[in-house]
Length: 455
Image 1 (cartoon, rainbow, N blue to C red):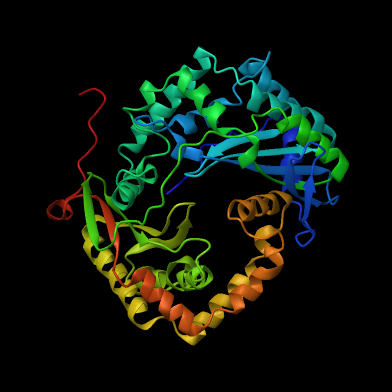
Image 2 (cartoon, rainbow, N blue to C red; image 1 turned 135 degrees about the horizontal axis):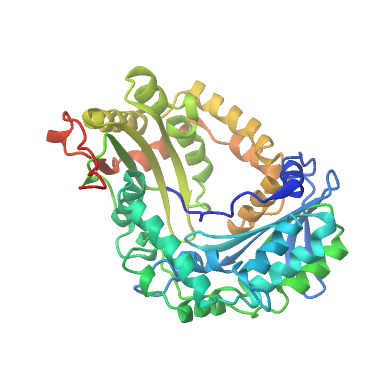
């Protein structure tokens, strides 16, 4: 399931190639995070890194898709697609020309709980980059022609998703897990809701959500603290001091086992499965993270991959991940299989989940998982952009600024007893399962041919 929005296509010209190459240059400063407070009181986590003349910033405002107005899911999503479609005295075309001319990457995306943004630029273009971001956040135009163009694109995507088995499975899974809670609503909207979204809804969302009190910022790059502090004040200092967020209640996902089937005449059946997870600040979270790696998060080494792919050849891939939000948590997995083997695939997954719930992992599995998770951390932070993203996520998760340094010790502290207890806690009740594909009685028959355009 994908919670991020479609980002802008690749930048044009040689300057863009230069920026993308620099974005992949390694950052050596993962352990040197400092807390920076601007003259105006705006806080950021900051790593000064002069390895390459590049600056990467990630930031987030509290709220996200959970702040969509009642009956209009998709408002936050639409705002994210429109903030860079012209602002102030710049129309959409001129705004993008300025971004492209300086190889500035500016994008926005929405999760359930946060409205997030990314800004990347060469050091020499920092003043213009931060000014364009300021304009996008404080004076978005929401011109009717731009709104209708973006609306048409979103509706086209939703229509494609209506026959996409993975999209249907993900949407149905959230509905099954969360029912009428905001987390159960599709963040990209529906074919019924998106046509009803008005410009007033977009402006109201910005005025309620984009504010300084929920702002979290992470910056990595070739810039000194004094200069960065002044840029942050210029960029974010004019935003409202306090957001006006609608309260969102805590919710526990629906207790398994439950199963839903969506008939769709496609040759490959998609299976999405999961259940209630463990929240980020639960003392058992790291044990859950480690044991999930063993069951389904470890790629080619996971139990599910070995059982479903290697032993039975039922699917090309199968994975499972933990998903945590401010007000709930899930574990969620996905696979695709041949229509006539869907039942066998679901049974194999269920059997492996029951086995680890009852017996837990072995000591060898635990040791190997811990070794991998410790060793892979720095590889996951090997660019300025990745490090900025991680630093922002740690802030959003309300973790300490030295979490990167402490993480391996937390992983090491997970015992076999912890892993077995948490495996039973996570998977002892079974699975919520959504199956999208052909009905069992039709699975042995070829998929119906698509109608000809001439019919």
